[in-house]
Image (cartoon, rainbow, N blue to C red; front, side, top):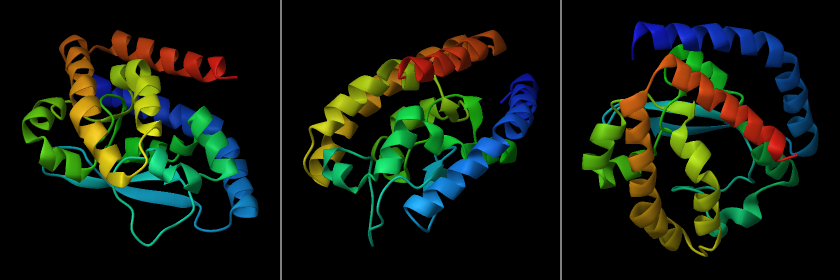
Length: 203
């Protein structure tokens, strides 16, 4: 990560913490009132092919003893009413401001993968993770709806993992590598504004 990109991240994360801090506090109280504890959900993600970190999100699902893989139709029944609203607005990702502040994430980059997919596709992620993962990115903006539609039809964890590995991983990697070749501060700003615009279009 270049020093310019890191300064970009630190400037905007500081600004957003001040602006969004009161909103996050209200959301935390809402989750506590509606769903109870725990409020946060932590998941190991990879920032390089060999180094993981704890990704912070707001909890949007009921808890189970064991959970793995990406979310597909097999997990749909676990999404709470509050969680569905948070996901629709991407508000469940607000705690990732902490990950940006720590340096685990950038604002813009490939979404941080789960370890199991990095280990299953080492040749892909060796290239993709040359860019620091981000909260949003070209693949997130371009492919999110198609990925959601594909995984929504999956009725088991095995089917979800198979579809994600066979179709989604290589498709998103192509977009992530396209971003990597053209990355600049101006491009990052464009993708951030596209993300914000997408939230408003969701209503």
